[in-house]
Image (cartoon, rainbow, N blue to C red):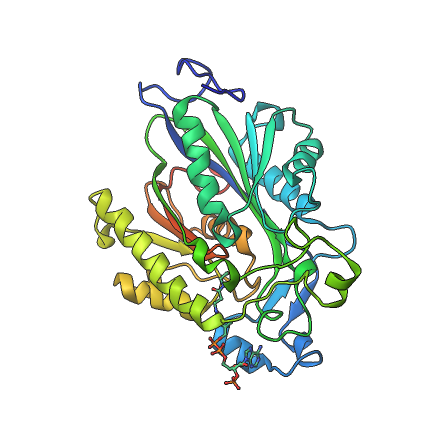
Length: 354
Ligand code: UT7
């Protein structure tokens, strides 16, 4: 078995007392750029209106990274805040995972910059499952901890999507924002990460993509001139419909597999892409809207960062309490989607055990 700093024997420094290794979230944190970009900003660039954007997406404003701000710098800030909330130092972390589709560089991983910035010496890697990155990362982190390969993991979702949008494409430029969210996962005696469902349909590879800049279409003068380095979504409605079906079915199957009913759910924290998608997922699941966390109004769609930003905001505002049963779910490019079923174990912000 590969270990990355954890105790594979199951008798090490973790917090567990039982025989079966489990993973739980012990800290969350988030960070967004200072620059606020209201919907009106786009009215001068493309044929759109604040009203259209609000009504069709639920977004009022988003944050765009300023000079010197990057995916790595936002990830570092969010990571530090999550470590503070967990009450542990960067040296105590065995592994850093950064879920992102907007890495600082093609090489090396943004996780390497975060490790350097935090002053840690642990293993670190990036994970790209687009908007579902945090869901995939949560499942990966739990597997590392449950297997004994790690005791403490810093999982971060971070994006600077403002650097890859075409400000003249109204079908995409109004949707996205920048930010980062993080969670510390530690070995625990009861399951905080109960189960996950991960899905992907590679046949829909073209529905949401940045065509150039990789091995398939390397950067060239031509690729830059033709705007091939920006996000394209040729059929937003198709993504919308697949997102509703995918997230609702991932959630429903996860509940069923674990013998839980929707009535037992305290909070659903979905990917913050579109308020209408979230409402449709809630309706399909027959979950009242007041048990669904909606937060894209101020930050837009931050892809892999959206769920950890929402979890942090939900916890800090008192919407997440110890013992709560929580479903997170996301959908995005790939097309990749999935869900995590969580038992919230963090205490009140600032309180004992927070
Ligand atoms: O996070 C990754 C996953 N991504 C998503 O989940 C995004 C999923 N898709 C969506 O959220 C929605 O499809 C959009 C918000 C992107 C678009 O909303 P829609 O209600 O599906 O609009 P539509 O694509 O059906 O377009 C309706 C009209 C079109 O005009 P015509 O052809 O009817 O004349 C569009 O060109 O709205 C037009 N339109 C806009 N109008 C004003 C598209 N974007 C804009 C805009 N402002 N920004």
